[in-house]
Image 1 (cartoon, one colour):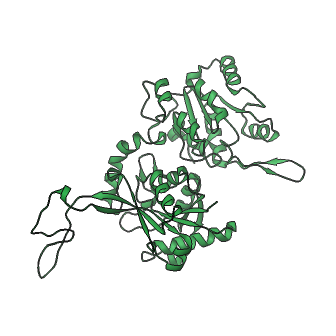
Image 2 (cartoon, rainbow, N blue to C red):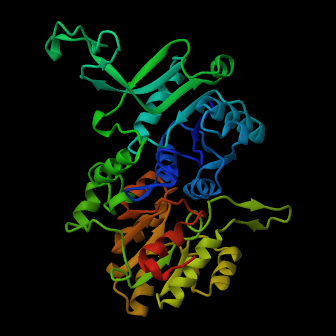
Image 3 (spheres, rainbow, N blue to C red):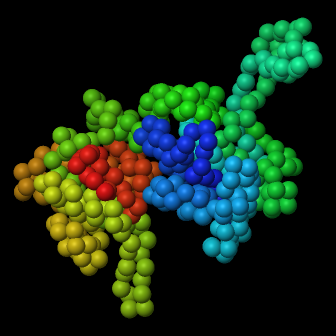
Length: 412
């Protein structure tokens, strides 16, 4: 199986738009948007962010990317993206003891880059091309100024103005995503060599942020372009069945006014779904301190909380004790247990937010009013959710949910 690595270069310094890569567009910073689309692509093995900035590194990690610290000598204004990709690819290969077959350069300054375009350039190289890039149809007439002769046509003869349908099709490089055969990239050290495949993108979504005006346009377009695309931006479900369940679906993420209780799955929601087993058979999992902070804030706000897990595991019970919230684990039918808990607590299920990550959470999704999937959840679960976090399970997703509900009441 081929190793396909996406590298997102994201320096901290930007003269045109200070702090550009952390600038919010729609529901998330630019770096988060790029990581999210890469993680949703089917053909990628891993996503890494190459950065010299601690803030970008933290946001990238929270979104589920591996972070590679970029050396100072390739972090200046004059450093090339190719240099960052070559460095990140080398570090990734050494760190994981693998050889990358296809490497992608993904630019987070293209806020409306889609997972389909990422898969498109990757597939082109996997299918035999040496390089690939995203392009969009372009029908404009290009002009260039010259001191001696004045303006002259670049892609046309200014003395002849054919109809659009009579002109050859021009394609504009979007600047969003590139893919290269890794061996050729190492040898040539630039992104175009051999046979280059052109992968068409939706021209309506093509925008590169280079100055404050571009950023303002992106923010104005985000509600239109994000709304029908992912649940993270609007809180809308992605599938028709969920639309039918919520005919008056609000265009916002839940607040405290919408929710009377929060119920949390454990594995894959409060953890990254990995388990470490020692020689004695004892299991260890990794949790996120930010999630504990969010749960503590919800508890202080008087929000009823419950951990509900299929696994009967002392780790789950220990975590619940640490967080000082009740737990039900070793449960075969989570929906029945949840329904009984709601009845005993006097809480209407339609006022419950349930956060999960896998198909065994779907019965609970159909029971509650606010089914929420973490970013790393199974595709089917994300599609059935009413909202999706930008953070994966075990990387701050629960804290993010707490921030939806408490807003300014949740302080770092």
